[in-house]
Image 1: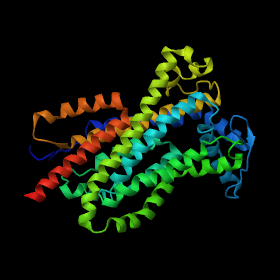
Image 2: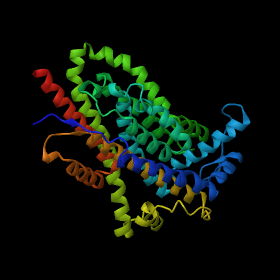
Image 3: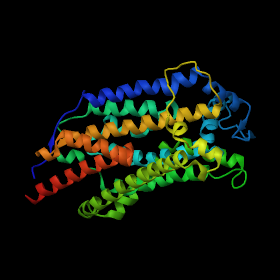
Length: 383
């Protein structure tokens, strides 16, 4: 089998698609919720110092600066409702959202540490994610992926794909500690398990998970490097760790995607097995029909409905953007065989997206690319 051949996709269709998704995100996540009053309604609720479906009072003091606390409380009120557990539709949607986030963060954290990306846009994944928590990841992530592809150097050598072995070990642990654990604790019911203020504080910690995940990984890197020992030993173990970490990303993103689809399908085809309100909330039309983001000024039925529209768009924009980026990156490395032509990779990628979900397919594409690179480098070392 011939060695993979790099090709350039800079400035081509994937970049155009990603910039288009960015514009769509600006309408869906900024213009539309501003025009229908969702953001102002959230800020009003925050100013009343009430939170959650029960409008429970909570401690709004965080920084001591009233204007900053008022702004931060707007975010806290929004994120609190995502894990409140009082709404069946939002609770179900957060399952594939969280599962996909694991896959996206695994890809982003590994790509940011790749040798060829040093001091380039992909290296600033944490910065992108932090901005996305403020502006909307559905806006920032397509732009980030587009700029990453546009900047990408098509003349990468084998060593440019290298990632320090410890990264494959610390990435999943960092995601568990920095992202999954705060989310899981924040999702606990209040006031039965956590007090309202405890839940609010965990939500605040969850809001900044891009930063906490990054800090945890940086703290663990020296320990993992010391544990792995010499470069030769680390290199031998690193390949197995690479497969494990991509397997984790595939498992979480795909399992959550399948669970979501199975619940929506069941509620739509067999509604009698659910309570009537659950069947209605989980129906195909309610869970998967995206609101027209260009219908600016449309009346807002309720704050909860506006939040659902926002999260639906955010989820699909992030997921599709990740898939488009991964497909473009995979197409940069072709093998000299008609069996692995661009057309077959594209069709295979699209089929994977339908079966595994966009993020699951993205993990498979990057996993396959890294496997090809590893095999090629191994053959060169033998020669």
